[in-house]
Length: 109
View 1 (tube, rainbow, N blue to C red):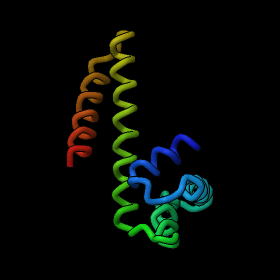
View 2 (cartoon, rainbow, N blue to C red):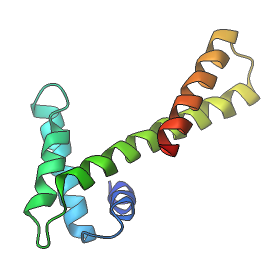
View 3 (cartoon, rainbow, N blue to C red):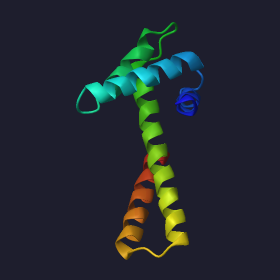
View 4 (cartoon, helix red, strand yellow):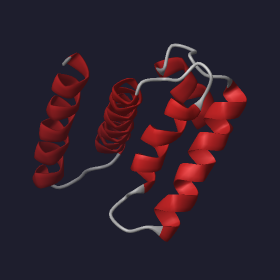
């Protein structure tokens, strides 16, 4: 969680303190477990707007989208490593290529 807090703080261009980043992340994960439909993301968007100085909700939403794209890219890289090490079905290779392309386009946008 601490590494994720540092990563999110760096994506936000150090607009928040690491303590606030960590607390917001843990609170949002608490709400992930309680509320349906990943409403913990709404909490994660709302809480930085309450800080001093506040972080705009659109900036927070953008940082969350970037973080999700980075997560997808990391999974794609792990799949590529698995494909290089062990034989896998051609469907897995095609799926990894498509997902990797979508992740790269998303990060570029």
